[in-house]
Image 1 (tube, rainbow, N blue to C red):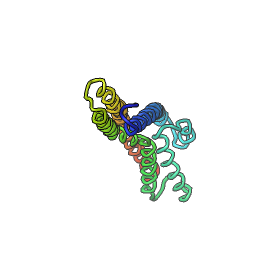
Image 2: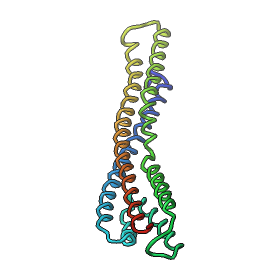
Image 3: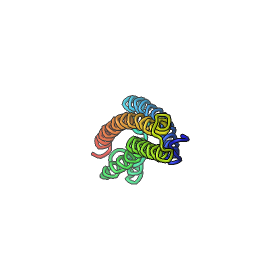
Length: 214
């Protein structure tokens, strides 16, 4: 980038940093979401096969990466507290709202964890093309300044600066396109997990109401 100037070079370096960081996040989020989905599937199968909630709670630490397992653990811990306070192992007179709030809080925390780092991908997808365009415009301006200073507009004078300036636009698109694709893909996967957490919370509440809040 010797012809387009330091500003275009700085823009290119920033875009390279964006691209490297984005790819690191993409790999990390892909692996973590895939593991979350697989462990949630295994947890659900084990949950519906379990005979007792306390037995399932003891097994739930095997599914540390499953958001459904974490929601279940929060709900069960609150249920156990209510049972301990009531001193009645069979039925509870009230407090279902406490269990419901515990489930909601846990689900909110899991959503925050699932969505972490995705905002950076959205930022790169929306800003990288403009940073690249800025670098290109600045580089072209520098090229025209060189033309004016040299007093020559032949191809040998113009081409190097303009071609280097256009690299910034290409780098901006190269950083933005994977980030946007990955962001939309991850968002879809997260929405599936969110729906599964909603459904599981409803099922868990129904079980608790049926067996403990009569």
